[in-house]
Image 1 (cartoon, rainbow, N blue to C red):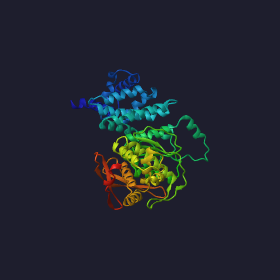
Image 2: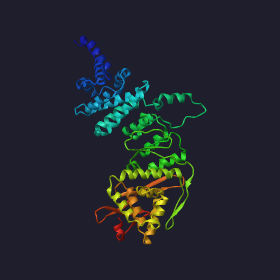
Image 3: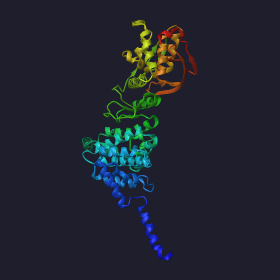
Image 4: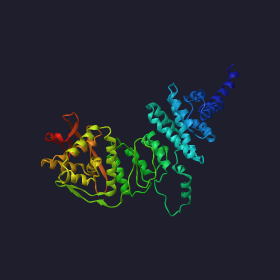
Length: 459
């Protein structure tokens, strides 16, 4: 009997081996029919073949790539696809995480195939990016499953930014003189968006495996969490200055996710703030200066000074709406200041480029990022002379850089524009109205404590 069934068992094993890791023709047909129904806005029941196949552990990413590519070769990606995949991802069911991973694979195939579809492929590509951007609202296990689905395919075939150039730009690049070198790091607006979207989806270490990116912006993102795009236009010294600033003032403080250098024509959607630096000279420095009663500040490149101001504005925009004590403290101090030349804060505000009441904290923040310890030394010395207003203003500025926590950041910017920062412990007390107010911090190797009792009425 054993001899009679052995050939049958051999055939059975061969058939099983052929089907392991891939769809049978019947399964592939059902999945393709489900995808066609999805593209046509069909009913939820038509998606059941996807629900049934998604949990299969014997199917690798390549098997899904083949069937998704077959569908997308003839049917463009549309919002109907996106809506159906979203429904499959968010509706509770045992297969939910498997479907989230399948959705990630599908979007990865769209990103891979859409740029080759003329003329509307780039719009499809961006639509898939927008779908992926929504996943930040998903519970973490589902968002992680989508990311794993995307990464499983893109790691095997990373996106090429050159395919994301508009046709006109690509044609210009082909006809450019060979004597004019391509700008290192020059990415199309869509490539910039792809980097930002995938960066929010992937671990920083992985995004360079999913997309071929220039070393400079990738390195800054992986070390600071902020994308810095300069199109290859900045001198090395300016790029280094910005990278050091992003490291010293992290995104948890600034809320920044993307920084665009002057001349970069992109407006990406980001998970945080997206800022474009204004045009500033790449040569020349603000001269060294002294603040009363004799604190010295080193020269700073004008380009770096512009970046410090932009960073200060970002921090204020993030902090004031969520921390009413900062806003009230600023307004009460402004109301208590002596008007005209008698205002002891005039030299400080002028040095910070003061532009009006809303610029009070940013102007002081520029000085704080220039040299925190020099600024603290100046206002401490003035306090010994009975002049309290500069100290009150600087303690408020230190609190601006605290994120509402128990530490602030002490900065120093050198004459080359390199910014460094280190954490410093804060001491707060409660004002008579219950507001917290900074009255001490660690600086210069010691704990600086200030008695503000005589001037509570100012704050």
